[in-house]
Length: 405
Image (cartoon, rainbow, N blue to C red; front, side):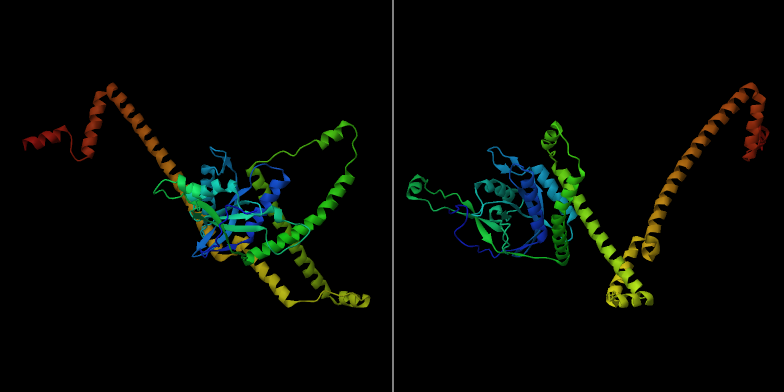
């Protein structure tokens, strides 16, 4: 069946898509969770990357909720989507990433009419050259392993339809036909960095191990449980897993990723420890002799492996700042700055308290002097003359002598 939204012409824009594995992992994870939890609604997400000339890189992806428009079409919530894109841009500043397209599930024949409203929204509001990554679940065949990925990347172009004779008669003179959006397939290739290769290899190994361990764990758990009788079994069978929000799902996914990373690190450390202990035990003559007599093969000493272990341990010393010169100096400088600001604040509070104490003391002293002057006016006059004499002005007699001289 021919898809009317696909252009009959091949792409002439010269664009080439570089697809990173992290996008594939995010898309597959979202689709798997959506299907396992039997959630309703479309599966939609955004794509972040860079555009260097005629090459577009798809480096990161995140899932998006959807809302219904005035005519029932599927759209993105504008406020949430703008805030989410801004957060990802703040995180991925070096190199700077931008919104380059979106992804969703689609039949093997290509995009359909349900994809057009959301694609128009992205073209009008965010990126006029946004690409569309369509994932085809119908092409997945678990029993066979094919090299082709079940996805297609499209670009959108505006093409006018060739009107029929009836449409030409209905067309107003001078009016041009309205162009429609058509999709053209773009060539793409998977580009993998060194860090991504390590991560994919680790995920592939851990997923295979988890798939083998899950049935054994479930069997052991079922053996440990005691069989229950009565209506309790029916109640347990009817128990439904509570639905989780998007934030809770992201938190659980992040925690699982960190847990797997810690388990992988622990296994690597235990492997290094076992190798070092076996090498150290093989160096003793008694152990060597016993192993040779028994016919067992002892661990061979490998200097390159020991040098790699030593290099790894030297890099781990950054975890103790007191042993590093520049790092400890910077840490001490920041600590001193914090303590200095705290001391300056305390000093300001003490100066303010002393000023308040001086003001209160002056008020009390003036009140005492005024009360004592009312009781003994002569004493008040003598104190006034003493103050004038102390200031070099003399008493009343000195003032009169200066007047008549």
